[in-house]
Structure formats: C-alpha cells, structure tokens
Length: 270
Image (cartoon, rainbow, N blue to C red; front, top):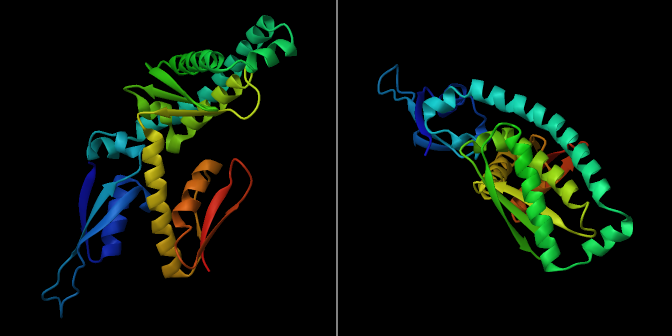
C-alpha cells in the first residue's frame, strides 16, 4: 500500500505539503490525522500536526513504491503521448477494418441475418472483437493478453498486462477510448442493444470504489463549506456511480454541467 506521513504546524499545512510532495490531488488520497497539533503557550508545549496520506487512485496505485510515484512524470508523459497516438491509430485501424468488413459483407440482409443468430454467433463476435482490441494495444508496442465472457446482451473483455498503466491512461482515458472503438467495431456485426465492457486488472471495480469514496468526501466538503463542489470532467457512467453514491445523503443534490466530453458533476448542499 502506498502511504507516507507528513508534519506541519497544522493539519492543513501538513496536507498541502503532502499533496505537493506526491504531486496528487486531495481526492486521490485518503487522509488520516495522526496528531492534530498544538499551538502551545509562548512557544512552549508546541506540537506539530501529523497526517498520513494513503493513495487510493487506481492509476496511481499501479506504482510499486512512493519513490516511483514521485518520479512518475516521465512515465505519465509517455502515457499522454500514447493517448494521443492511440486515437490516430484507432481511426486508421477502424477505417482499414471497415474496408475489410465491407468487402466480406455482401449486403445489409447478410448483416441482419448474422445478427439474429444466437449464442454461438455472439461468441464469434466477442472473439473477433477481443482480437481487434488486442491488436490495437499491441500496435502501441504493449504486450497484452485477454479473454471474453458473454452475459445476455453484454460482452465483457478483460485484459492482462505488465504495463496496465499505459493501457488505462490518465484516469482511464485510454481504456475508455479503446472501449468506444471496440464497441463501434462490435456493432458492425450485431444490431440492437448490445454493450461492450472493457477492463484490465480489475481496474473498473477499483475505479468504482475510488469514485464512491470521492463522492462521499466531496459531499462532506459541500456540506461544510456550503458551496457547490465541481469535479473534473468524466464519462457518463462514472458520473452515475458518484450520483448513486451520494443519493442517500441528506441535504445533498448532484447534477451535471457542460457538454460531452467535458461534462462534469456538481455536488451541492441543498
């Protein structure tokens, strides 16, 4: 577990020192107060505050040590560069694949007939989609393996890699982009309400826990400050997780502002 202790004249000062040292935001860590600190009298009996910061953000938890976390800037720059490159590669690969698909499919009637086939057909689509997504990742020079599972109208693809952080990207941006591209590819073969859920190393569940904890923390902040708390932009399904997490907290309301893909959640005290 990634954790580190910090001291300061006050809890707030110790917190700011810790956030700067780790280069993280408040919502990415759990804050445990070890000592509140005392001002003393005329300088006597003075005690510094002490806190412990524990990293809870799934992306940051990929690092093996606090030192690796502090020195992550070069790696994150490479991830951001990969994020930009993957969008270009995705567009090119999708177009190439679309051309191949169009050559293989003779008519819309063939697509319709193909989509109406039951379990075996959906398994074939799932396998093909899995190979398509893995191909994109491997073109990023990342070793990756994966498997799929079909449940009702949803295809679940789970990937494994020693470089999961590169596939996840900053706050899941690369993984979310891959999921959209994979779903668009899947919908060439199946019609109707079908979903693709793309995951790696149980990131989705870890991210869900982080968002739920963040939502509760920000709801408390909104109650204490009596001011709306605006969060960073995130996909609709992540905003929904946060909304559900605080839905039972009294005197708190949530709503979204902005336009996709920059739409963000606001947590407000009623």
